[in-house]
Image (cartoon, rainbow, N blue to C red; front, top):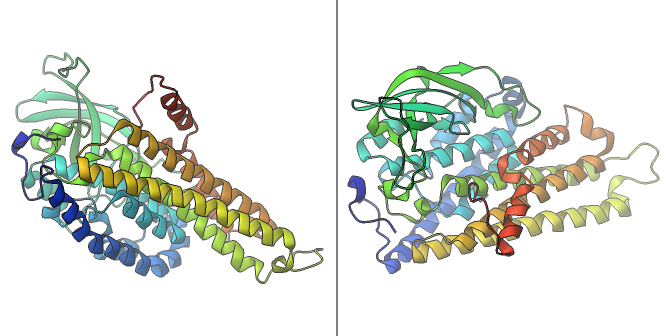
Amino acid sequence: MLKAGALNRFDGDLTLADNKSVNRFHQEALPAAHGCLEAARRLLPAIAAAGDRIEAERALPDEVLAAMHQAELFRLTLPRFLGGAQPPLNILAEVTETIATADASAAWCLGQALGCAMSAAFLDEAPARHVFEARDAVLAWGAGVEGRAVATAGGYRVSGSWGFASGGKHATWLGGHCRVFEADGSPRTTPAGEHARRTALFPRVQARIADDWYVLGLRGTRSEGYGVDDLFVEDALTLDRETPQECRVDATLYRFSTTNVYASVFSGVALGIARGALEDLVALARHKQPRGAPSAMRDSAVVQTRLAELEAKLGSARAYQQQVLAEIWQAVDETGTLAMDDRVRLRLATTHAINEATDVVEQVYRLAGATAIFDSQPFERRFRDAHAVSQQVQGRHTNYETVGRFMLGLDVDTLFL
């Protein structure tokens, strides 16, 4: 639990000292949280209609972005003084799942932005408003601590290059994760003796952008590389996102790391792709007569059986993900802390959801036959998008090893927990 008054914490949200108040607040927030699901569902026709443009332009069209901003979806994880709803993890996962049934790139960009927006809780109120108060504000950042931040009067001189900034094309701000060095070039160390890290935030217009996003799937995320050279960034626009003591806002959402949130929302993306693919297959099976087959797809016992099996497979993975996320949220809501065994459960449920969803998409693709290979059909894009999701860190199979080691009482790497 954070100490009261640490780093001039903004006191606009409830403190965790009164768990009854937190639980009451949680219940009061549920209507708003479910409202964001309804808002997401209303956007589906427009997002689906823009799918070909998203793919061709490798970015979200202006009208799609405008609709998402109008629905305030990019603001869900902001502190309340910036209009954030701070919904539970299972609701956040449902939001990205819903959007992904229409377009995976739109859902992935949203999920990435939701994780980045949590950084507002680690800034003082004035700089947080400076970055996020604009209606179209979006923060994007890349993977890895690839930058160098050299301490100077009032801030840092930042240099570095980063990749995988999903949504960087429409972002208003970018973030660079850096190792910190003193003015004399020596590394700054934490009390634990580790090399200190900070994330520097800067307007996108101050960065050089690499046109390097030519990929199999998730093409519309425009997850390009970017960099800066000796850019001055005020101290107030830097944060250590992995240090709870820097959090200014007492709310359940910020007890979770960005890694936890990314696991939740990106597993939602995978489930949404699979749900869309399965619905596409049902629609196809109702009218397709495969060449040389004795019956239409809908009359095939094989197709009927496989549809039922895939529905159960996808539904089971989703139910497990939703149950675990809801249970862990409730536990953190009540205690104010995220226990290690719950971190492991979250990792397992979300990794499982991604891999089961990918398997469903693969099998849907096979069942659709030659129809699936055409650009004019939705199957090949969902296939590519699902396999792009599965290649990310959230879906890697080594996550199962981490969970298994924990179950056996062995040491585990907690980097992605």
